Image 1 (cartoon, rainbow, N blue to C red):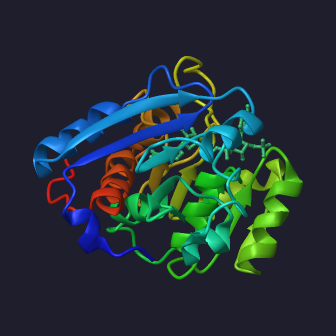
Image 2: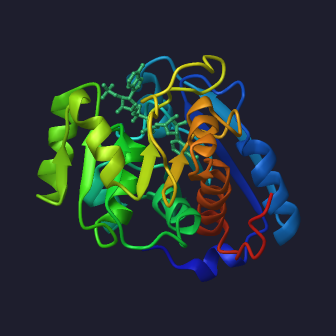
Length: 267
Ligand code: NAP
């Protein structure tokens, strides 16, 4: 892993975010607040690529110090970096790249964002909607905290890949099992884009029973309260949106790039 002392002596970093459609990204604003807090100068630009190949061409030929990655390219660089963290190795998805001394390093700071967001949640049975990079990050965090993790995904083969990675604690379920799984679970998490701006009225599941004593977490942060969370709250659940996760994963990425500590993650 890189030596943080060297980056401590730098005070200007060229950073950015890679994805396909980034028009509404909150990341530039969040990182400029962290830059003010740590008194370093940064640029944080948005890099949109239509294809993986265009991203890969750019990746080996730019002058950045590091960048974040979002949908749909979190798996693109697997096998193309000099070193990745153990978490990236396990889940096969990364959201942070560091260029350091001519070498490239990959990290998954979504896991840190999830851990900060769910730090109050006790060991529990969990229902996860989705099987993409964000779902895998959540399941990585939950593997020691949950006795059972139900996973429902539109494409069953992707859910089965998760079970292969994480073992029998993960139970792949069908749509017809969902009422039962909701009743059994203490934590219910949406890791799909269903309900995200601008298609506000979609959701992964329509709740139909009391949710008292349960926590419902939606990784979406635009809007701050999805229809899924609104319904869950009406039925008695504690609800958590994706904003704290967004801010905390960003903070951890910033710390990796700049070797400065973010003491205030409330942006
Ligand atoms: P991803 O790797 O592309 O995975 C998307 C997942 O959503 C897949 O399981 C996919 O199912 C499912 N999905 C997509 N469209 C669907 C639809 N119309 N109906 C049913 N299922 C659908 O994306 P990701 O990185 O995991 O991100 C997932 C969500 O988490 C996004 O909303 C993203 O904004 C959010 N997120 C938030 C944060 C944060 O900091 N708060 C961080 C990361 C991600 P298939 O396998 O069937 O395609």
